Length: 318
Image 1 (cartoon, rainbow, N blue to C red):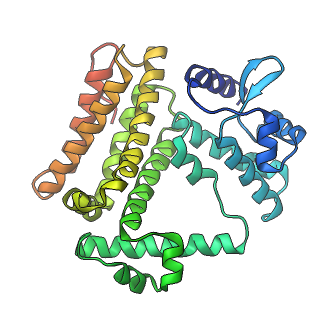
Image 2 (cartoon, rainbow, N blue to C red):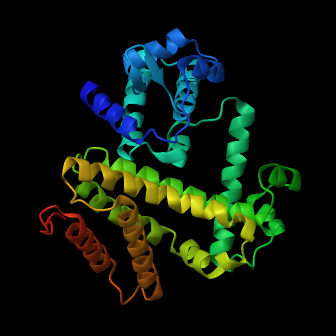
């Protein structure tokens, strides 16, 4: 655990440029947890080590707020001892770190839980609305669904609906965000024990296609209907997909430093891989009966291996 923590801190030092960081005193004010308790959490392994710039100076990013709030809930609502919380946090941090920091969406998904009955109720209502909207969008398409249809399908009234969403455009994009979060979490779980960066990318490819298969109606509908979504919300969709590209970029960047991936420009390579996956997903959806998914996944893994392998030899691993 200590060796992994040291490696993680070094990686964050190399990527810290431009990221908003805070001192432990600021983190304490945001979370209501004393600085001594935060330092204790780090020493005990409940939190990953912060970014050390000096022997007595450390900085934390926004993800620590959610991690500490999660610990507080486990303590005060679940009444768990610190020894049990440490076990839970170690596993969750391992998944989070596997995605090279997780990005905003994975951090929220792994560590953010509502505190209090009102928060639980809102999360439950939001989930019910998104699930209902997903069923309707898959069956009727985006343009064929109204806000009233979603309310009726979810069994909520207008006050409940509009407290959480401005309208079906936001529902539509929040549903897409949930898929992006699910992708990041599944990938993190799949690669959490893999140290070779090239193999991490290879393992992520079947996960990506499995998620598309499970949600192919929604994926197809988005391709057909996204142009009808309010243009002011397009930036949100781009931010969802760019979060996934950033995860790939980080893995490639680390792989080139470690030698498991040949020297490439990480930004270009990450966008190339994302573009290939999107196009192959479209290819399968166009004719799933005649385009065998196993062949597509295998070719995608082989192409990525050939493109990134430091010795130009494709891997024979499944």
